[in-house]
Length: 261
Image (cartoon, rainbow, N blue to C red):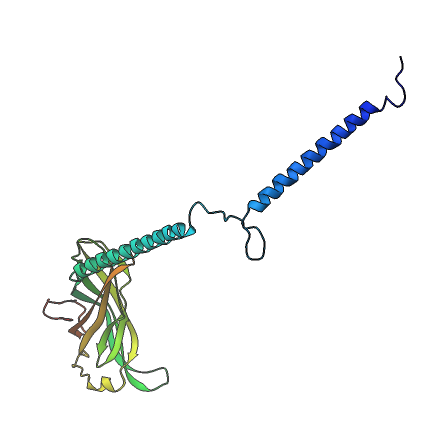
């Protein structure tokens, strides 16, 4: 038996109405629940809903304080090290000051000595003096913890304030607790004496005794702690001597002959 056209659409239409009713009910339910939640929020003065503030787990001040503390500790440690090292260097420097190099003039050997009449480079007539010799010095380093570097300023053989021969001690290194004999070659060739030569007197055989003075300064430097701690000493030496133009024997000096200061 075929259903009539009027009866056939009744079932689908009821299903459609049921679907529409379900959708509407769901939509209205969501709207009501949403509106219900919105209605439950607190609102500020302008009507906007208030939002909760997210709190950080830990403040940044703690990390900054720890970093600042570490920097301060590093600076304090560095400052303490510098102070202690400075005090240590001062103590070592003070302990090394008494160790001065001991200098002793031993002898002067005359190799060539001549005095005669002549003229200087401009043609002025004057007496001319030629002297060659070797000076020997004894150097002792009493320091027990460091060696020394020894040198000198020009070593001059002087006649009436005129240097008639000159030389210089070559720089060298001397180990601790050691003694060494060093030589300095003095040379002077045809040195004009000018007015000072008028006081020279000669014997009948042409001999002359000329009073001279050795003048020089010996310098010593000890590197106690590398180049950070150094000790420096200077010793000025003056030795009178008389040279006979007819003799070239070795001139020896006693300890009391020269002055050391």
